[in-house]
Length: 63
Picture 1: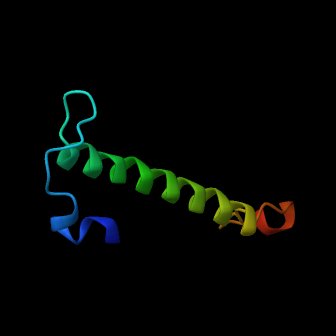
Picture 2 (picture 1 turned 180 degrees about the horizontal axis):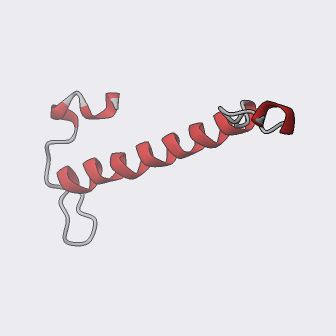
């Protein structure tokens, strides 16, 4: 996220990636990078704290 704050660093046309100027593909790269980091964080949290049901699954608790 901090890579998008200083607009002066990426407000340029060159280098191009295919038909896209640097300004466009740099921002798009951050979208995918942020999504990947969020997905990795989600998986790590799920492994560290496995799901615990809100309702008891014990037969005694259902009666």
